[in-house]
Length: 268
Image (cartoon, rainbow, N blue to C red):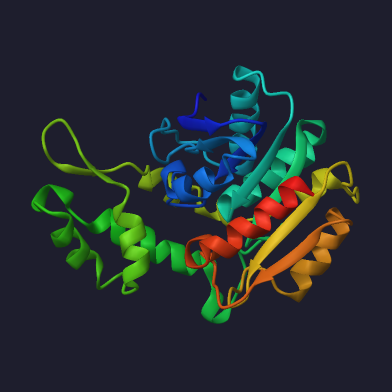
């Protein structure tokens, strides 16, 4: 699949992979801040942004899309930065293609499966609720983003999350609002997207061919102590840095600190 992307800057390639419901545009501020150190590629993953839609959406396909992009651009090796779903895709790609990765940076996600999480951090339940709310909104009925926002409020009370999701709206040729996201495909494939990297394919191997950095939000439940132990098994030399007073969206909550951490890692 030929992914939509934008590129700028110069130097060693750095490919940035957004998370679920996101797009490359969400990373423009981060990318521009890093453009003095690397040639930046902001990628829309399948079923997101301006990239094609597909009924197939799993980490194998996301990793294959990244490989195809690098092959088409004749990028032999790149640093890769991925957040959340993008981080899982980046890990999967790095495990399958270690020679194509110069540095691996993972923002607030671990290699484990989140399928059976219980309690307040039930990720499947949370995303099911978001996707159901998006699917139940009849976009043809509304003339402004504000109207759509008010309809989402009952199912998605967090204003910041709604604002993030509303960035996926655009007007089609008929003048009606439409989602850039392939919501139904994402919903059907959600169990696989909530699952972990393919630990069976790893089969006890560890990866030390490239430097690895995990960046964790202090208040986020996505990287806990058992996750740190799993990360150390797969990437024994991985560094883990915590960004204080941030949750899962650490790069948006503390962009300057996030950029500082990534810059230091890139040039070290």
